[in-house]
Amino acid sequence: MTWSATIGPDREYFMAMMQRSGPEAAGLNLPAYSPEQQRTLTGNQITIGRRRHSTGDTPDIDLSVPPEDPGVSHQHAVLVQQQDGTWAVVDQNSTNGTTVNGSEEPIQPFVPVPLQDGDRVHVGAWTTITIRRG
Image (cartoon, rainbow, N blue to C red):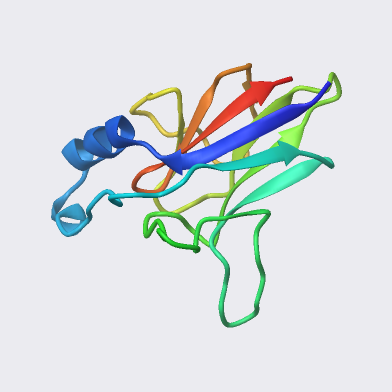
């Protein structure tokens, strides 16, 4: 059973995040154009974050490439394959948190949250990762 992730900017999530955020978010703008990335989920875990220039550490889903999402931590979250072949998301105690399916409440750090086909994982200021089976 193959699972994939579609990664890209999400206007709805960005607008909701801006309404919840303080003045530090005032200068953020949704990128005008950004092609979605597709990625097949392989292995036991997929790291999500931004490349650390000082060490060269690069996560599997690197959100430091244009349009760089400034709200994503270097080690933001991990997608972890479960024993039954499904996937869960685990926040790595990120600065701005991780939410699922438009929830306003971030998931708890280091606690796996099971994902279903079509679930949306929100990280940073505008990035949504949609998980699909097949």
